[in-house]
Image (cartoon, rainbow, N blue to C red; front, top):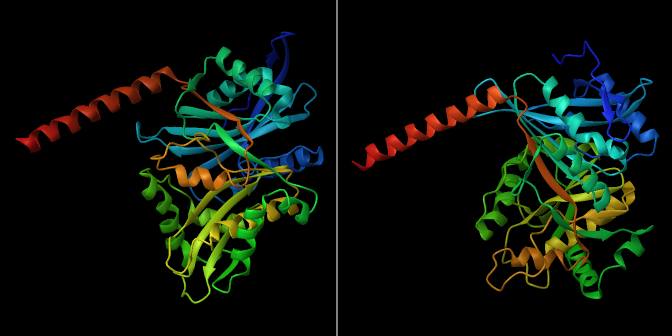
Length: 380
């Protein structure tokens, strides 16, 4: 499926000597799983997007790119998520996340060429989107420069966040919680100790519809469009332990409406990321009882016990919202846990085939003309 017949070597710019080549295998294949073990044995933090998520997600397909050295030694790797393109039937869109950090440090200066070669090897690939995620600005800039030199285009408005709040985690549960203010610790205790609530993992297909409902609520409040989430995949992955879907359940409620709030976090080897945090406003809970604080406490301690040194609170547009900003409540809630706001990511795009890109643009143009004609006809 993925051409491997000839090795196309990639040279480092400072030496102009071929040092790397890429091999693409199926996600979840024995080669992919063996590479994950090898990377972990070298004490490298492997993102959730490369490890358990390709095995449990139910949307699209996954491939694993192996980056190999001249001595046939595995240098590093990354996973690509492939979905069908709506712009041109038969073509696919690729997305690779979490490029950077020590995992990709050796190839940072040639990442653009590595990704471009990978894109050329994937049949019918219309577009590949790549997200660099690295809290170290010098390393992130080196990788971004590599993509620019290889012909990639930066996305000013990507699908994901570029800035986030960072919460440091300590060596013990007690030390971790004592890093928060007295008010935050009090809110956590009230939520976790309330007889109105119980906290625990969300399991069972009976909660699928409820999860989707709760996930959409914050976006309805802020006027945004909720992104699609793979609920079946999240439930399956959380059961395996590399992510956690935790819920706050109303003690007197009935399944599935008893799920009053939820949060989902992923583990990335040395840190964790808050992906989803949602709740239903209820008369059962006063201002003094916020399920969200209990959920955050559960996630912080889970991440610490998994070996995380810090937690990413899932992105913020800024830290100084206007009084009428509909995101104000979310921003102020997250800032109760940290004031360490930093840039961590940027997104880039490549269209590896001019022919396919041109055909897709033509198809979109024709479709827009047809929609415009239908709209004009309805007005008449």
